Amino acid sequence: MNIQATKIELVKAILDSDNIDFIKKIAEFIKVEQKDVWETLSLEQQEEIEQGIEQLNGGKRVSFKSFLKKIS
Image 1 (tube, rainbow, N blue to C red):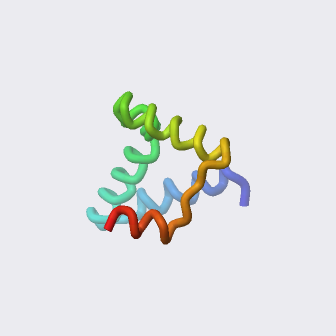
Image 2 (cartoon, rainbow, N blue to C red):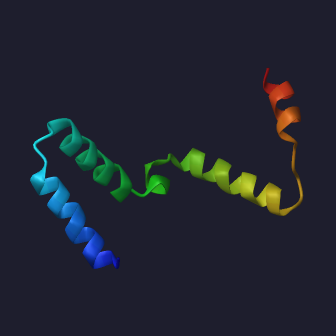
């Protein structure tokens, strides 16, 4: 099934449904998926993520177990 056919099937399923919870869930899903998560982050959060990526790319890594010990 190609993407256009899938879209049509989705629209048909929505139009045929009388389940308000189903419709609300789909509407919320679409709203959430259309947001660019990066844009919802503060400048500080974006900078921290970029710093973390730089550290990972530079070989600075910590095992998950070590991390858990450190924060507990």
